[in-house]
Length: 90
Image 1 (cartoon, rainbow, N blue to C red):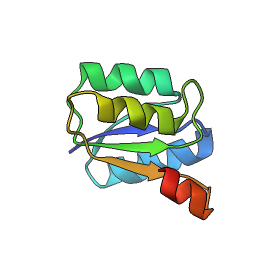
Image 2: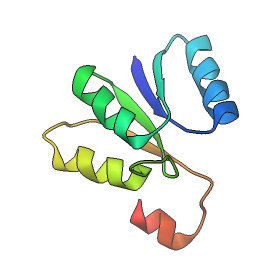
Image 3: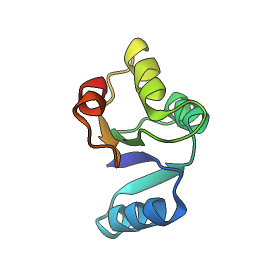
Image 4: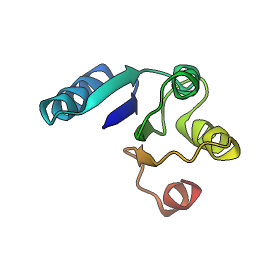
């Protein structure tokens, strides 16, 4: 399974990437929204792990753009935000 990880925090990203690789996933790790959008245009991913707080554009904007495209790509949002408004917004 090919995973795109969009996470800007170096410690969190490294931990997630290593855990996925240890479980035989192929992982590409990007650190901002522009790189995430570019990556999905180049590679056929099975899933995106998307941090809401990534820079330029943020994760919710990346999600909006992915949903507006013709791609049917599963996205799992990862975030430290826990308010009801954030959950509904995602």
